[in-house]
Length: 384
Image 1 (cartoon, rainbow, N blue to C red):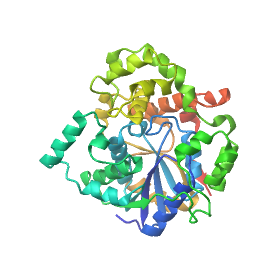
Image 2 (tube, helix red, strand yellow):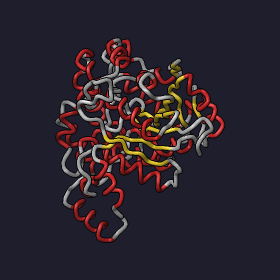
Image 3 (cartoon, rainbow, N blue to C red):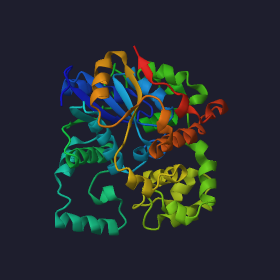
Image 4 (spheres, helix red, strand yellow):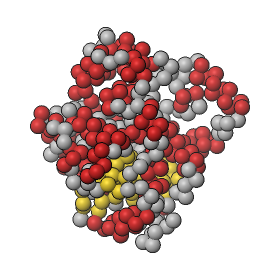
């Protein structure tokens, strides 16, 4: 599987926004694997938490390419806004299909807990019974499996299980998440992406926690920054005019959850208030948030069932030095590589990506930036 120019590591990411901890992971990935190239598969307009990314996918790809990545592809929205299992499945399948990745690198809060969770045989009768009992008590699926409240750990478990279920030749490498103060990243402090998003649009506030190139991009973004709160009216209005049958079609809706959501929409004035009314031990904030976006975009059970794995890889950007790798991908990928929209604008999964960008653009701070043609006009980013 190793290509002639050396080893290649795949990384699943969102970079919302890219920060020092992400730079640390890329640096550690090179150190741990000895790879010559890093290929990223990154969420597009919306992330796995069901929120719009703070900047569009091409801008975030540029951040990554200027900070250690060599090639960036987009994870189709059909997988980007799903639960941990399907998010991981889609990302791993896409990287595997490219045919060049020797490693799959991911960050993790607790590697010992990751190893213990992966060693658990969930087909064993006593484990199945314990899982059933905990679910019956109203616990979320992750909690019922005994996993701590660590999103990257949960994803790490699913990455490794996806590799095994697909019999992928990629080898997993878990990178311990960078500490808050990390000398390996230019001596700068590390803060989570969710904390950084709360600081925006104050670019100077995030400056200590992001690479210099990323700070320059954010500080010049102005009205291009996107904010979840700008979805409030659309989400509430959509739900107040939607039938329970239509909402039940959303990919992650089950157990009558559509009725609970629609009832809350009658009283909630904002998206945050709506989620607060619905969430509980069983139905987490992230799950409710994802369902809202799934309903808005048309991520249905039927569409998901018809496309269990990505059928294409959309190229967002690459470094000039990675052209040898791009030729390897072009010659050996099992799925088409999309450079331009072209005929894929009629593909049902790619049309979902275009709808996602059109909706996410409405959350931009500037009216001028709310035009919905980004998916059609953006060019592949090339870094020299």
